[in-house]
Amino acid sequence: MIKTGHTKLIITGVGKGNSVKMKSFIAFALLIVGISANAVPTSNVVTTDGRNFVSDAIIEAIEDVQQSIIDAGLDPLIVKKEVFTYALPVPTILSAAALVEEVYGFGLSNIVINHINYALLASRLDFDIELPLIHLSADKVIAEANLFNINAEGSLDGRIDLQSLRVKGVVNVNIGIISGISISNVDIDLTLGSIDTNIRLVIQGNNYSEQINKFISETIPEVLDEFKDDIDELLGIVIRDIVNDNL
Image (tube, rainbow, N blue to C red; front, side):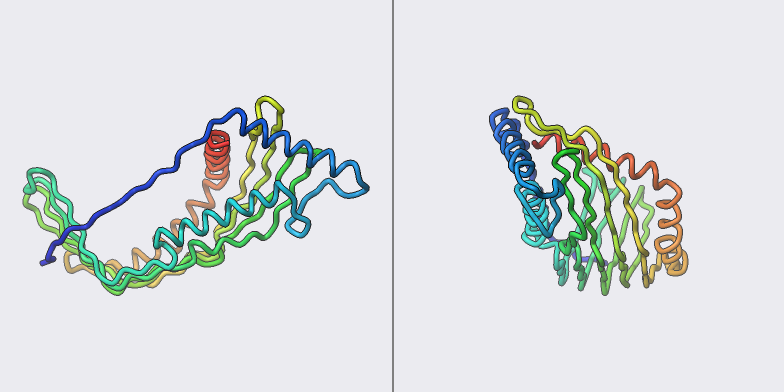
């Protein structure tokens, strides 16, 4: 039996800016950068080795994401002991409780910038970023559920490691004095090196460890590979819409 307690979940959101003046200012600054770059005998490609306003802004945004993940307590993720509960107003229809102990995770904020190029004349951004390793482990997870007075229970422990989650992309950038900055197209190439698991899963006294490990480490990568083009297209659309909404 899991002894229940009270758990508070706090969700924070991010507001979106929509200032025309700010868009115009950023666009004007980018144009000035472009004019300055063309006024001297140098390349129009900006890399992480020769950074300017554009690449600095992108790298700063990535660093902000890293810090937000750390500040949220997600890297490292350390849970000594927590109890979670859920129930409908009439608990005989549905109620559930879970106990987790010694949960540890790391790697979510370790965003490695392999490559960033911004071509001023082509208004095109090329990037390659990577999460080398995401690790999650738990010493004990026990769950109990009741559905229409039918009881079920299970336990889980072990680890999962995601190796080399990598995103490469090409972004077409539109710059206007009045309209500001927007992106018209995002081509994404998402790859995952491997998923390594060592999980023990028991449900109603039956051991499903072999099945869960095979599903996570083999079936999921196969599905991701089969639908790679569709996933890349969806990610491109989502990234484009999020960026345009927040510029």
